[in-house]
Image (cartoon, rainbow, N blue to C red):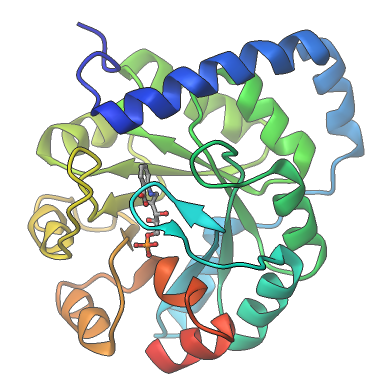
Length: 267
Ligand SMILES: O=C(O)c1ccccc1NCC(=O)[C@H](O)[C@H](O)COP(=O)(O)O
C-alpha cells in the first residue's frame, strides 16, 4: 500500500486533483522551460533564518497564513486581497508568510503568492500539496522561499527527494506531521523545520494537545512549528509551556478585519 492509499479521503481527493492539474501544467510548460525561468526568480529570502532570528530574540516566531478558504471552514475572507494581507501581517510582526496556492479546495492561486511576496519583505512558504519535483521547481520559479512537504501524502523516498531538491534550489522546507508514525518518518530525514499539524485531516478535528504529545517525542534541538487551531492567547501560552515558540496561524487572522492587528493581539 502506498502512503497515498492510506491517506484520508479529503487529502486523497486534493492530491488526485493536484495530479491532474500537474499534468496539465507540465504540458503547458515543460520542466526544461520551468528550469530556465529559475534564473529570473528573486533570490530566496531565508525562511528558517527569519524564524531563528525571532526565536533568538526570545520572541514567538509567527508564520502568518493567507488563504481565502479551506475545506473544513469554507470561505474565510471575502473580498480577499493577498497583497493587503501581507502588508498587514508584516506591520503586525509576522516572521514569515504562508500563502495558499491550491485552487480547487482553498481558492488559492500562484498569483496570490507572487502578489503577497511582492508587497512585503517577509520570506514566504508556498502552501500547497507538493507531490512531484515539478512543483518544487515551479515554487522557486514563482519566488517561493520555502515549500511545505506533508508526510501523509509522500512515501519515504519521495519525501527525501523533494526535500533535497528544494534545498538544492536554495529553499527551506517545512516538513509536516500529524501523528507518531509520520513523525518517525520525518525524523529519518532530520528536517531543519518540523511542523506538527494539530488538525486531523481525516475528521478535520483540531486539538492543540497534538503538539504537546508529539513535541515530547522530538529530539532536543529540532525546530518545531505548531500548526492549526491557534485562536487565543491561552492557546499560545499552552504551546509555549511545551517549549514550542513558533506558530503557523491562518483562520484566526483571516477572519479578523485587520489580520496583522489580530496577530499583534495574539502574540
Ligand atoms: O484546513 C483545512 O481544512 C485543511 C484540509 C485539508 C488539508 C489541509 C488543510 N489545512 C491546511 C492547514 O493545515 C492550515 O491551513 C494551517 O495549518 C493553518 O491552520 P488554521 O490556523 O487552523 O487556519
